[in-house]
Length: 117
Image 1 (cartoon, rainbow, N blue to C red):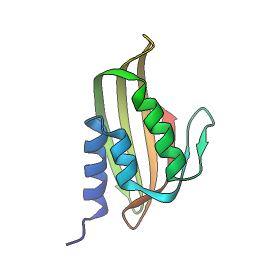
Image 2 (tube, helix red, strand yellow; image 1 turned 120 degrees about the vertical axis):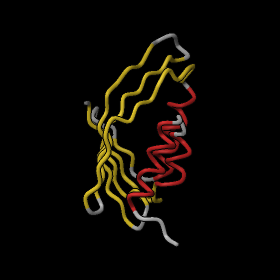
Image 3 (cartoon, one colour; image 1 turned 135 degrees about the vertical axis):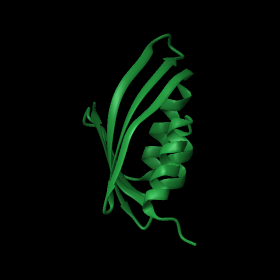
């Protein structure tokens, strides 16, 4: 039986909450997925996004917490609100509140945009 989009969204959000950001990208992004970051950074496909996420994840020394506050789905568009708390290998700390707007097609992410919360 095929999973509903709501089930797919829930599974992806669980992976992110568990710190499996790279794995979630591998599993749920379509090959031609585009992403748009609040700082203007754009990735044009899954390969670019995987490279970005691998680099970021590799710079994390400790995950202090990843909290999913809210998630919603309307048609093929979902929203998720997260707070990320990391200690980085360079000694810095990252604490950010982010809202993800995701466009889905056939259970795969085709576009994702990140907003500061």
